[in-house]
Image (cartoon, rainbow, N blue to C red; front, side, top):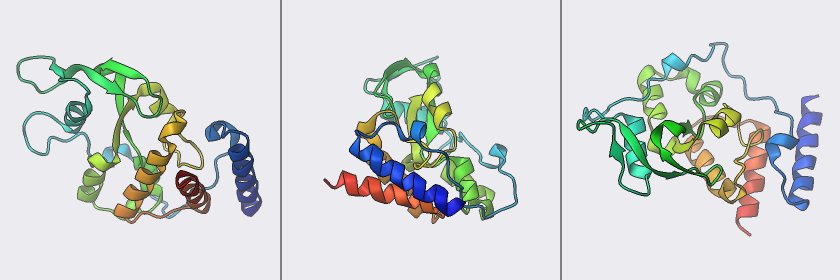
Length: 198
């Protein structure tokens, strides 16, 4: 049954490419993930957001500062917590000015990483992964929830113009941390890479 599902998924992907590439997450059923562990995923095992340099700004705040299109405003004189700025969510292209309106997304979700090899990591390795700027994006809450812990064969950003960058960053992060790939995940990344070369 699994091989049949994979074949159907690939056929649907081809049809979607020919018909204008509708949102894949609405067209495809999630395929089986690589199951490498019986250890359940626990978000508390992945420490974030941390203040690595002890300046009172944690990873979330530092990313908000680094990616704002305008100088940020802080909640108070201590300058620990960002209040406002200007962020353009790459998944949708929407603009946001309140820090409270955005989430920080792990491009490769923590739960996905756990299922694809990170269950064997130490707490220190998980902390590094969870706070790695290479794996973080400022996005809106609703889109972040829609993505959840899905891989690219299960979900792609509504903003099709970001598909190439998204797939490249997904693969770069997984290769950086030597995480495993499932067959349908590898197939969609290969197809996206081919389309991005045109």
